[in-house]
Image (tube, rainbow, N blue to C red; front, side, top):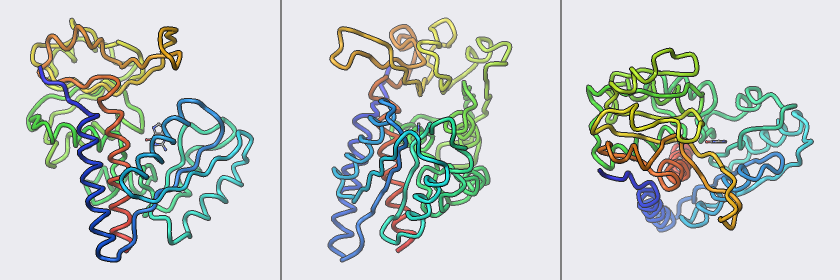
Length: 291
Ligand code: GUN
């Protein structure tokens, strides 16, 4: 069994990005600049956004964090987005999700200039992704592709079962892995809460992408020997023995499933760190395309 070490792979990618920044500087070129907008005080979202900003600093990117109060109106958020859209120093930016209930998420995502949409959430970029055209692939699916690539996991001709159909992970993952691309050419089954015979399907899977958000959902009796398992879940479970008061649990019962798997991602330290590295990669790409 091989652990797909997202923490180490993400560190490798960030090292590569840092070298590219040095090269850009040596050539007198602009350094990539990522901005992030966060609305409200959700603890998990703040942690993620801060990690993104810190990662920028570590690789030598510029970063701007815009914190807006919980009661920010849709109109003023749209205004902030517009400011970033026209600011030529900003190469890419993200609006951290979820947004407060009174704000229409889709309307916000559609206001982001697709050329600065390093999250790849704008319908223009989702459409390009679905057509296998050059675009920004959103960070989590992009990170999973990169992890599979760097560990030489064969996907061509394999049966992939994706559990979950979210716009951020399940849906794009199923599209990407079925495409004719470096990591792709798989036969993909996408499953969700209405799927009737899930275990029957997962038992046939060569590769399982678990992205449903239910802690330790995927058990050993649901997978065949030598399966590859990608765990996208990160649920906070209260744990008084931890300084933070919680621990992170994935969608996979790691201890039992890892005994049957050939490759598996841990939680934490699997997919999570990869998403930040790929967001940075997209920001560099945005900067290169713009300049
Ligand atoms: N919330 C959870 N994942 C993401 C992400 O990839 N991007 C943004 N903007 N918000 C998120």
